[in-house]
Image (cartoon, rainbow, N blue to C red):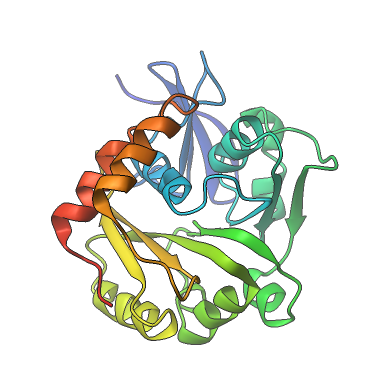
Length: 249
């Protein structure tokens, strides 16, 4: 079934097909998707995989998300982490203007969308969080300034001592290995990554905890427990991370 654009503003448009409302910059990629029957479910495999941060920090007090899109990750964190504050940085006011289209909650004490340049925001020391999720793309792809060594370093400094940085990268990006090497240096090798479910995306998890070590059996047990509260294949994420033998410490 062909998706027919229902809304258009500058480089953004929406489509609705097979019960999914999606945000696009162009015809080649989907930036975000919402299941109209369950607007808070994570409809795309990459966003499900990004929630693997729960394996590293199951009860964060503050999650900071860079890149709003259709708000899938902010909405999920807001609903399923009831004690957690969720802040989202988005540079485009056009994207923010679509929040009602995707049933994104209004700002309140636990939920806030800030229009800001994330590079400057981080460099100015305005951020502080237990989990930082980087999921900001434009129609050209990943902006270089959002994958620079200085930006990753500013993200690390904004994390709490046991904080986790989660990054959505495109698996066929020619610079993927460069980004991974930067993260290895900044986090002293404490990075793990895997292919996302049903996509070419690669999701990276970087721990700010200098004493963090993975016990795969215990992590599988934790994943099983967490799945009681989250409709996510967290055990599958553990297996993907383990199979790749990607710990580089």
